[in-house]
Length: 424
Image 1 (tube, one colour):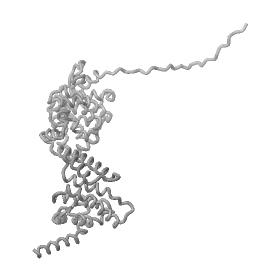
Image 2 (cartoon, helix red, strand yellow):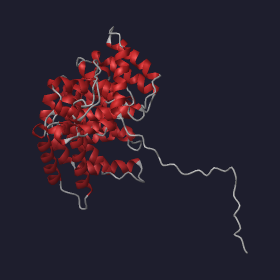
Image 3 (cartoon, helix red, strand yellow):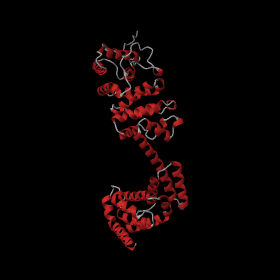
Image 4 (cartoon, one colour):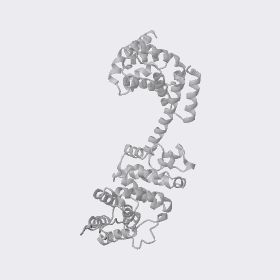
């Protein structure tokens, strides 16, 4: 009779079974309540700044999941509790922090204690900056649900977050402002007005431009205006009335530079075409663009000379050959230059543009005085303009070099003038 052989076993070995991933359900309501209680219990009522500092000290030792509920933390400090839709506090928010951003005055001085607390929290836990960005975006998307005072507080706090360099990325916050619904209602225009005003109280215009550049909105400032007011004139009127004249001047200059760049691109295409366009066609094109876009005369003259010089092929040529090529180009475009260089101020613009171009290209450095003589002989610049340039109208770039280079010609002009006086 056969018996079944038993298989060997390992005594004393525990076989582990795979555990399922245990997902802890989110509970932002309990977290918000804990934050409110910590700050309320720590407050002694002496001042908001002291109350906030006391609360932060307790937070340092609190066993709370800050990484999961970073945005809830800032919602409590901004609004007194956890946010729900429409900018309201959540229904399950039983307790409210009595001191918060929206309960303060809409001034940088009143909101500074909160900015310092944000700074302190982020310094201790850098990952909290993402929660601050998320909170700012929530408030921006809910601007329409707050009154004017509430929107001003939110904009003031946002401006201070950036002027005090808390670490928020501009593109993660300011891009949210390009919301068609909020823009159409004018909420964004009011927000950015306060934002610019508050930011410039601490930083300068260059800092603001750098911030807007990083946010990739520097070329879209008009998009912050409602569609019915989306013009340069309305933009200038609104922000001038808000005391932001330097910003208006900068944006006007930027708009002009953009249009001038388009003019230059069009001119270069016409001059480099094969065959090139006639002087009459080019003149008509420039006049049309100048009238349509309101381009300043000085910018037009500067672009004309830059385009003429860019049409000159300097490759593999010595200075004598380069000069002959320039002479030919100036003769070909003499009518174009004479049409737009119509007074002494524009003649000076032409001279200064020539000076800068000669300074920036070593191949043209020693040709400056020869080109000035060419302009003088062609009645493009007058004697008085050249004298004024020599005395006080020159550009800083290469000034000493060019003034010395022009001395023989200046002396010749002075002697010619004396001879004319003697003849008279």
